[in-house]
Length: 599
Image 1: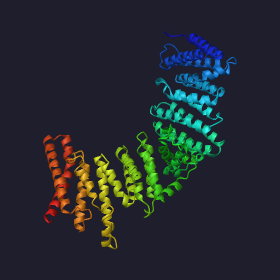
Image 2: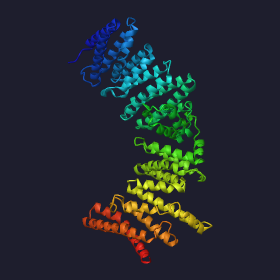
Image 3: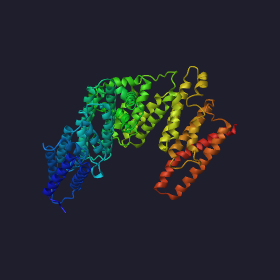
Image 4: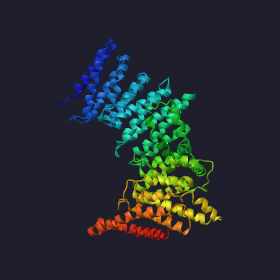
């Protein structure tokens, strides 16, 4: 049954009057009952309007009429402040639901929320709005519901008179959690998400205006909180409006303008040191309740710099000089390592547009290409940087493997090699070993093993060209890549830890690279009259022959025989993949047999 608009208005006035009467009389039980009745009544209307259950009626007209009558009633001089205060605990949330009906309803609902902010206690309204934002019903988990409430927060924050930092700190997680939720439901055709971020910008301005009037520790802590807020939103903004990155640009420019106020520099952001500093200020009491909302602040910090690299107006807003920042990274290995560690958040973020990852790779290449010399301090323990370098190169691997754009994959691989070359030799082998042993991609393992072989080849050339070749070979061959551990990398592929020979043809790329590496080491050690890897010892040769090569030969010949019998497209692909494996495998077997004959 469809209720007529006049009937709804009459019921609304009666319910409001009942609430006023019970509140003024001091009958708390009756007033709670009346307010609950009012909320149920309003929610039933907003539910039906948003669900479009009212046929032959104009939902926008009904919603606007209801909101207008509420506003007129509440603004009446006859309504006492105690009534307004009591109804303020429930009406903003109920009113926000009507904003979901249309753009016009959003504007009317927003005005009504603002009216409550102006008439009621700021501290009460802060709690009321945060509660409303944090507990929407499923049907109303859409941007339009939150926009008037966030607008109310924007206004109420500047009205608070005491305990500014604590009050803002309680509100920020609520705001950021809503933005995060809305980013996951972003619609390419929906402009409401953009409005939502504009409200978030307004809240940032409110927090900044509070900072201006504070002094001492509270000012520093609130400024740090604003910094984390801005960085988190920078991340959410970058992957929350993926349909058109250019739509993000004006908002990114606005948020970049806050960085200088928060005393955040591009060097401090891209190395992460300033992010750590402000994080410690905000969570110094070891109470991390609600601080999970800043989980992507480091991603936001890296993106803030990459946005500046992408668009000059962003860097100008942040008052940053990018050439100076890049030069600083090029001249300092530790800072460069920290920057690579921050960029990994961009490369590993699944929700981020590939365009931003591309700019991240280009920025990294720009830094690496300008390095004049790779100088290291003998007194520094570079192994402490290994976790950062390992996870960073893993993130670059993800771009190499999953980018659909061929030039981006090539740039990512170029960046990978340049970062690898920038790692001290004492750590480089360990990083590559960790990458190989923890990769589940045959193609990537193959690429990494080829990198190991290239490192060994270059090391051999350097030793050969040394003025003191004999001394150099004694020292260098026992360090770096020419050591017994390199054979473990071959074994990981040819005799996997789980047992048995490798899976073919799935692992053909890795197997081929492992065989090529083994052949290279065997020939190099034989021709150089050295045995720094231990490959020429009898037990090592027998182990390789009996445990790696012969079982692999049985597998390869059997798989190829089966494929030749089937002779379909899949069988042809298998034969093509295994032909080079078979060729190198038999050469390795010949070399080992030849060596064993002379032992």
